[in-house]
Image: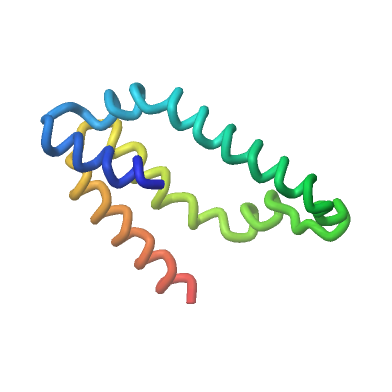
Length: 106
């Protein structure tokens, strides 16, 4: 989560494309999330905690199908960042698209 904000600042300050910073950060990000997952798993096991029953877990696919249009701002943001738009512009357009979709859906 911290790297997400820092990556934008690094791209702007260094003048390096955002995609290059993302490529450099993939392995450390995977290692971080894998170690965080493993520590939570070990702590939960130590305290005897168990997960929800599979029948009680809501379906992610059904939620995605019901509100598929909310993925569009994320797709637009990622596309714009990898096409070389500035992070500020891409973020502003993503936010504007999110607001338009949420207000339009209600």
